[in-house]
Image (cartoon, rainbow, N blue to C red; front, side, top):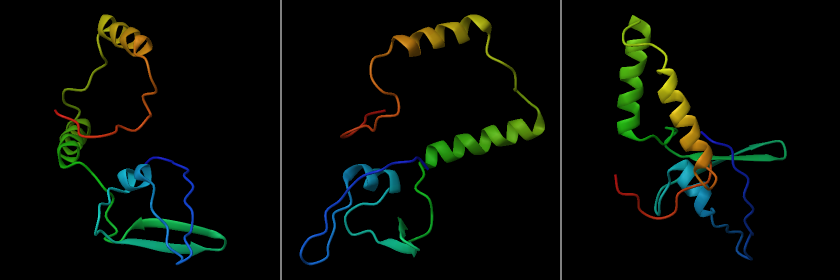
Length: 107
């Protein structure tokens, strides 16, 4: 899971709103539960179900990749020309690649 720092205000009723970026990172939506673990002066907020938020498609791909790595199959470096092209494309892409994505994403 990524690292993020956000500030939220406490209301007169002792309530806070989790910033959108925190909700997205935790994978929580309206009605979901979160747990507050207090460790000294730090508060750790996590999903109540204890399961990290994950995209099932990515989990499937990572499992397949792990299997290939363990068996030593289909593992080799990128062709040098492709690696150079990818690096050039990444360098010329404007914006921050670590910045969150707002709104719906069509795949």
